[in-house]
Image (cartoon, rainbow, N blue to C red; front, side, top):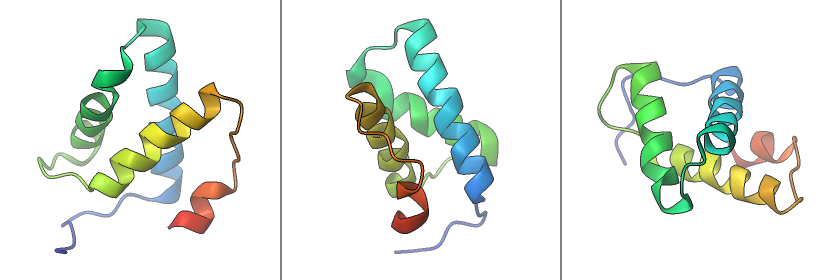
Amino acid sequence: MDKLAVSVSAFDCDVLRSAFKNSVFEDNIPEDEWREYAAQMIRDLTGIETVDPDLVEWIVRRSQDARFGSYSPHEAASSR
């Protein structure tokens, strides 16, 4: 797999996840649109069209986990 030309810090990942969760809740974004919405947020942050699908899945999965009460703030550090 090719590396992206830009790296996203752990802090940026947490900010993205938090903003994503807030947007999903406040804007009532349907779950079937979450992945594309998260990908667009990453594009907006990095300015690069190609996004890391693992980062998208991490953001979306974490939001699904939080919705069901299994949120763990230390999970992200162990998955990177």
